Every structure is written in structure tokens, then in C-alpha cells.
Length: 89
Image (cartoon, rainbow, N blue to C red; front, side, top):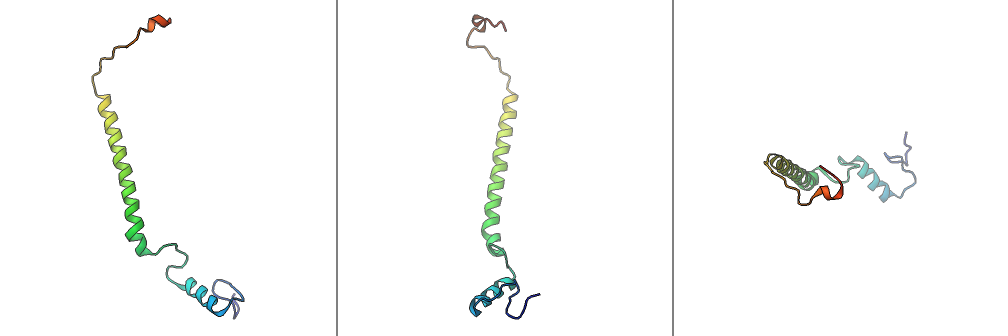
């Protein structure tokens, strides 16, 4: 339990102005958070969503490309004679 000259966080023997700042920080609604909820909603969340949906879009395009490529009716002709090297495929 904190004594009379300790703040809510258990800090002791701090000057009055510092103790007041520590107490104010520990009792704020956003205590311990690096950014506030408004900054999160206006900056971090839209940035995260843009990056996430951009990644999903690129993944979709790559899968679609591979699917379309697998559906092509290709008649492959080897450009070199493999039998010259001793392989008879």
C-alpha cells in the first residue's frame, strides 16, 4: 500500500511537480497507451487497413494469374535436343 509520499505507481521521494505529473499520467484514461484512441482511429487503423487489403488484392491477383496460366492449353516443344546429353526423355 502506498504511503503518504508515494504516488499511485509506488514512486517515492519525487519532487512535487514530478509527483503531480506521474500521478496525472497514471490516473488518465489513456494511461500506459502509446497513442490515444483518436490517433489510432484516424491514422493507425486506416493505414493498417490499406496495407492489409493491398496485400489481399496482390494475393488475389497472383492466385488468379496462376489459375489462368494453369488453364492454358500449351503445346510445349523443347528448344534443345536432350538426347544429345545422354538423356532419352
